Length: 105
Image 1 (cartoon, rainbow, N blue to C red):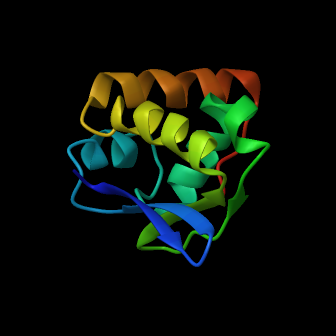
Image 2: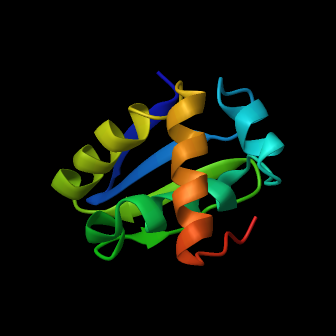
C-alpha cells in the first residue's frame, strides 16, 4: 500500500509517496508532473467535499493531507481506487481540464 494514515500527537495525516506509481505514465502523458502537488490538485478536483475539510502540506515527492481521521479514511479509500488505474486517472484529468480546473504541478 502506498498511502499511509498517521496519528502524531492527535494530528492525523495521510501521505502518498509520489513517483513510482502505476499511473505515472498516464499523468505525464497528460502533460503533468506526477508529484505531490499534482495529487493535491486531483484530490481537490475529484473529491471537493472531502478536500474542503482538510489542510494540505504536499511536496514534490509526497502528497500530504492533514485532518480528521474519518475524512482521511474516506480520502484514503478514494485515492487508492485510482492510484493503480491509469484509465481512471486519465478520466479525472480530462474532466478537470474540461471544467477549467488548473493543476499546480
